[in-house]
Length: 414
Ligand code: LLP
Image (cartoon, rainbow, N blue to C red; front, side, top):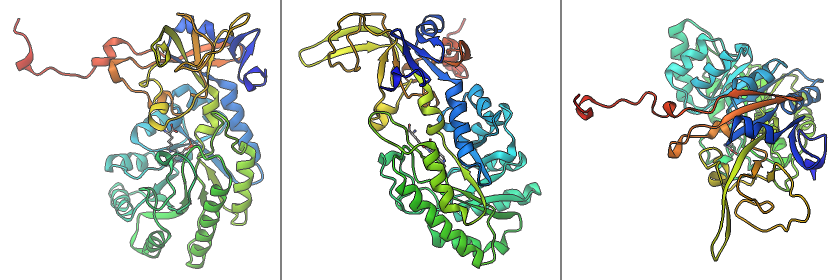
């Protein structure tokens, strides 16, 4: 099993679960739980592997920061040359605060507000991905007002089934994302009317946690055919953005490797000779993070055994939202003969105050956390070699009511 391999960023040494060279129990005791822990080298190495796999073609890797957007994680990738894919004004703010080069930022998303588009244009982001004719019109108007030239990519809906959970499938015709080829072509034909917009790219993103190559290849083929047809109309595209979506092994999935994914897509798109863009999120950070939690109680009724831990759905919503599976490991392996039992948190028998690690929680873990039940957001820690760094403090109770106002009529008079 991979957690026994010292090559893995999370692994057991003498029965103790480590992230790189740091025993996770140290972090759990010092920082408290629940707490997200990320491996610096794991994230960096995955990015570099992808970058190397694409070295034969002009390319840009734009990390989909929605997967995990802590400033330290963004910097880890930015420093290696990564661009960022953003989907909201708040992400633009985070990206720029982390020192991202706006010329490597791509702004995607079906519902960009006027102020968000204006800020992106003022910041000179590389591309805005356009998802509808109305959005194109809005961008034209906003760019005109700012005296700017907007560079856009058309997001196609390729009508490809990514064979993933329906909530994270985006490339089927019934999805809200992108435009059908006919609609995209109409926008291209009407481009003379757009004095402040230049169509320079084509974008596709068919979904997330995709574990086969075939849907990626099919979508890429449609993009290639579309870009060729645009050439026939006299429009030369500079950027071919094939999105993200590569899955990871949560359980027994066998997704293609980063190299297999990148080379397969590059092969299909290479004949176009354009700059290839990829927007991976999960594949870069998913396996590089774990959520540490403490066992509070164990209990049993006539139907089941329960292990009650101090991390909840507000910390990691993926199981409740997508029926997602995350392996759970004890920070200390049981000594001697322990009989495994089936509990609602799968693992060996746990005594109170045992610590557990919920694995593969680096992507869409903290970034989807909420304050539900008025639970403060968890702390985040980055491990590098034998050192760990607190990269986000646990939220304080005062943070929970920051910005709330009580109208005067509800205030008790002194
Ligand atoms: N590009 C675009 C336009 C996207 O919408 C997404 C993710 C990505 C790239 C990155 O996809 P990735 O490489 O991470 O699969 N919350 C869900 C995942 C939602 C993904 C949304 N879009 C989950 O926890 O599984």
